[in-house]
Length: 181
Image 1: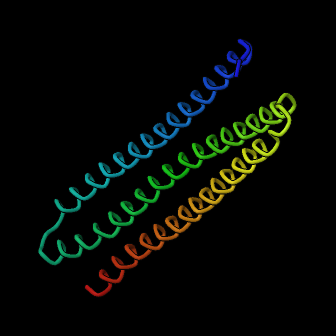
Image 2 (image 1 turned 45 degrees about the horizontal axis):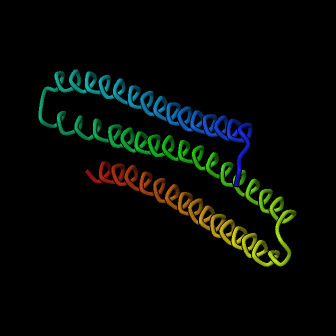
C-alpha cells in the first residue's frame, strides 16, 4: 500500500511524540525514586546519629536492652514505609506507561479500521467476506487485549493489598515483640 509523504511525516511525528512521552515518564519516575532515596538516606543518617548519641549515653546493660528495643521499632516502620513508597512510585510510573500504550493501541485500531473501510470502497466485488473477517479478527484481538488489561489491573490491585497487609503485619509484629519483651 502506497503511503503519501505527508502521511509518513505525520506518522513519524506521532512516533517521536510517543517516544518523548515515554522518556518523560521514565525521567519523572526516576526523579521521584531518587528523591525518595535521598530522603531515606538523610533520615537514616539522622537516625544513626541519634542512635550513636543514645548508645554513648548508656550507663548499664539494662539501659542498652531498653534502647535496643526503642531503636528497632522506628527502623522497621521506616523500612516498611520506604518499601511501600518505592512500590507506589513504581506502580504510578507503570500506570502512566500503560495509559500511553492503551492510547497507542486505540489509535492503531482506529487507523486500521479506517484503512479497511477505505479498502472496502476500492476492493473488487466478493472481497467483503475477507474484509469482514479482518475486522472480526481485529475486534477479537481488541477484546483479548482489554481482558488482559483488566487482569493486569486486578493483579496490581491484589499486589497492592498484599503489600499493605504485609507492611501492617511487620509493624504489628514488632510492636507485639516489644510488648512481650
